[in-house]
Image 1 (cartoon, rainbow, N blue to C red):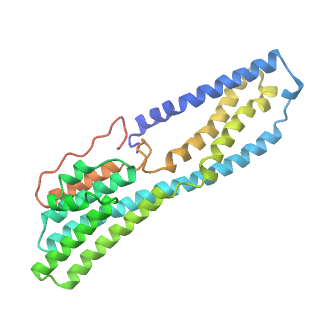
Image 2: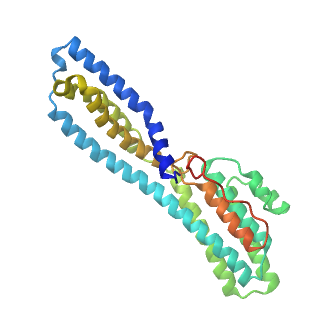
Image 3: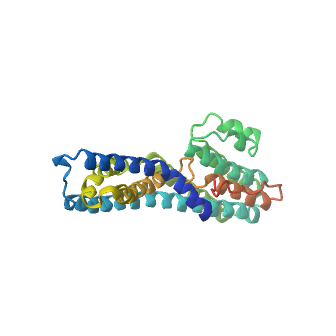
Amino acid sequence: MIADRRTGVWRLFLESLRPLVALFAWDVVVVLAFQLAHQPWMDQPALPYSLIGSALVLFLNVRNNAAYNRWWEARTLWGSVVNNTRSFSRQVASLLGGSPELTRAMVAYVHALRGGLRGAPTTEDTNRLLTPEMAARIAERRNKANAVLYEIGIGVADIVNARHVHPAAHSEIDRILSDLANGQGGLERIRNTPLAIQFSVLPRLLVRIFCIVLPLSMVQELGWITPFGSTLVGFLFVALDKIGADLEEPFVDTPHAIPMRTITRNIEIDLLQSIGEPAPEPLPLIKGVMR
């Protein structure tokens, strides 16, 4: 996620430079063809393109709203994971009398959740935090995050039975684990349910077709300066399409995705410090981007 506005603007400009150059080059070709080898079919009225452009903007706005809702829901669910892991650490200490193994396992859980959503291995992070016995039990499980959460629940039950903890305390901690499972389910639903193809493919196709025909409707009025006007208008449509595409997949490792590495590192710092163990440093921004 881009966090530094100054470097973020520059990054967005660099990402948009290629389509901007392509639009300008195509507009130059159209102007040269119109001025030097004019054909009757090039005399296109501007009104139909204005109507089509207005309709296309509305379509892009609907798609972008859907993409942003996916992105924001993913961020909200990660916020619930942050809050529940902190609550779990506190209640393990206050209601169960403390259990560093379970607190470290909760840190391993968020790393496993990050890896599962991003499709990246996190075995090194989980193994250094789990006990050897727990790491061996989850090694063959497909859903590592769910396996860790299950082991944490069993560990809580063992402590409750061994220390004769009141059932109400057990129920409160189990509620937190259920909330974590619900948050994980929501995140996995977003990952496993891509945006409808009508929203993910069709807008980009329509924008490209519109940008190709756009200079034909402007060259009669603008003449030689058509590349500047047409490129600017076309770039606005390309930018709208790019915004939706950037937000469409919130877990892919791009500068616009949810900063899951930063979130999980912050959780690790908070939970390890709560049990008095050394914690790593926060992740720094890399060229204005939270990872």
